Length: 131
Image (cartoon, rainbow, N blue to C red):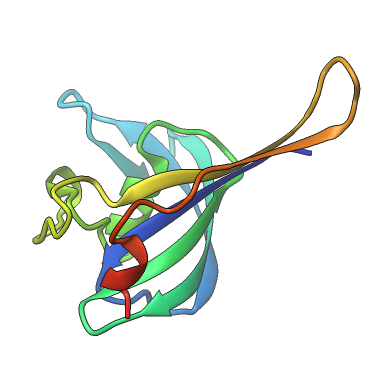
């Protein structure tokens, strides 16, 4: 069992508190990733709202697939681009950086077979934006 968990501060608020986004993704000549009806690679993103303020929402995001810019494309297409992500439609940059952070990795150690969990604290400002 492996898990890749992210924290994302997004503009606005997703239509559901928790949901799974499943699409086919394709990359165009300008290297932007977007969803298509056919001919792309399957991408599965699950999100859960942790907290929400008036402008921003803090999401816990898990990816079941590891496509390039998957989280950025899916959240943008949901109408809630990652804050600071001008390439995918964000209007604001409150922390002077992309507000997407890999915070948890769980995997099975190939030598011992035991489950390993690695965590990184949320960057300064992430939680305060979504209050």
